[in-house]
Length: 382
Ligand SMILES: [Mg+2]
Image (cartoon, helix red, strand yellow):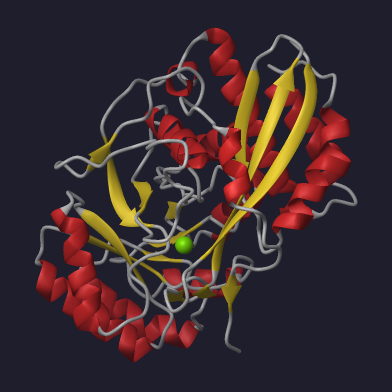
């Protein structure tokens, strides 16, 4: 079974006027996603999702102009070979770095969808796992900067839907962040796992002020306090308190960058995104490295049900898996555009889809409803 064509379709959705969510990475203006389709000469078609970075047009162009011709004609089941070819040609030399990892992630995911469809197996089974209930937290672009009272109200809404864990956005200012976390803990009580994410907006001074407060509030982790490559700050932050693990990984690409996290000894929770890190193939490798150091893997999730389904399958087949990041964004029509990939139950848990491959039926006629709006999806105040 050979790869014949690879196409990428970028889609965008503008948030309604005044409905932005603000967090450490900026204020959202739109959601973007790239749907990758891989066709084979045996009539099986696979779909994957590539993260758009800040430039959906550029990542789409990279897939069409460079990666598709590089991979056409290869065995569709040879995910390792496809990965290696892109790595040698795009990631390791004259590379385009993150852009190539984003593009490869969508293609690799589609190849796994093909493998599952060809074997008539759901991906979790193909990866050696079983269909099981796994804990989810209310995440995605939600619980952003707002008065502490409305934040607690939003949080209570997710608890009412079954979630036992949720993620608050920090990075506003150390004092405001601390006040919000303490207030939400007071309102929700002790039975909820509160996670936090600064989206790289902290300085080491901010971390010194906030981490002791997060420890008092029994927060489950502090995610991305610093830029992805600021290893010195990560190392310092890990020494401030043993009570709050530092999490990162959504902006780390391939196992080689995760190996650097390991060497820094500063990140206790790993968060690869299957639409960014190099796809399913690479996420499996990253999880295997993490397992040897007893590091839990809590993947970051992207926009559509394709990424969410792939993530659920991956978690169901991973020994050291943690939470599924459930996208509870109010303005993400891509989450359910192909039907719901998951439902949270009263136990706060989710299951992977049961159909072959990713188990997601893609209706391509829906793409035209969401024409691409190129450029970044966040407005940042400097
Ligand atoms: Mg994050």
